[in-house]
Length: 318
Image (cartoon, rainbow, N blue to C red; front, side, top):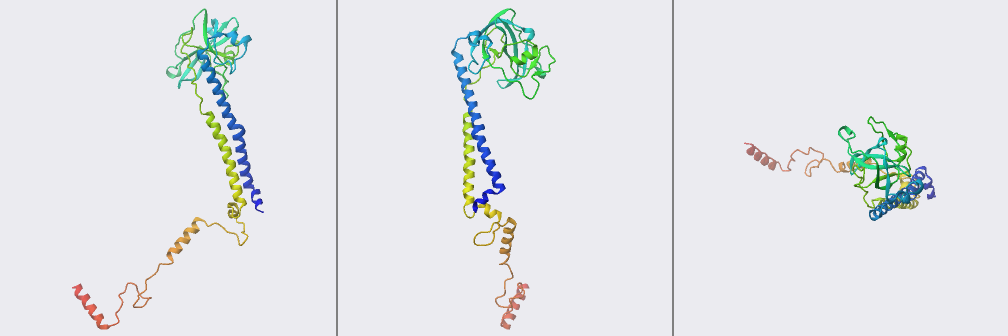
């Protein structure tokens, strides 16, 4: 039965690998890219809407200390309070417009509690040192900022960095990390200052509202899953037919004769050399002895003709 060929360990291993990869494409890789596309679309819509929307009080957008989410992120809010400059923290190893930067995270005391304000960024000085930058203003101020969701802590290092300066440093813009670094209890999320606001250093740019390549990547993963299944089906049908590649390569006997083995490259080259050498050999003398010296001059049958030829050769030599 040709079906037994499909029960070979090598074929079963290939089948398991193909179906596992296809399942990953359909259930993990493709949906993962679709989710990223949806997240990017939601963010772009929120950014576009916030450009024309009027800022609202913080308590109207996030009442009762509510944590921001993807629906409220990027909303513009107004916050009234007093900067706590002594509890300021720097976020290190940041990238702004393709260049390294420090982000300045300053807590603010408000009537609704303490919130974390991102005052913008500064470029590192010589030797990646923190440069001098403007301190936040004293007294009560009212600022306009955008709601941001806390960034996740880094997974491969401590959340709070070892710092030799006068300000602690963290690796993510997060109210939880600043709370851990300063001991100041802050409400969830942080608030990114707009340009020309009291206390802003260099305002962070808004993200580009581009869809990105995620939707195309999702379609590619789905196409890969379909392709491997079709390829497996093609080779399966091919092996079930007479003369399949597995039958020939495995050395199974054909119904009409002994087993056939595919020739190696060395064997084919040896046969070619043997075939080329079969036609080589000395060319026989059509007049004299075929077994004689091929370089010897054949003797003519008439002696007088031989003497005339030798005389001509002698004159030629002289």
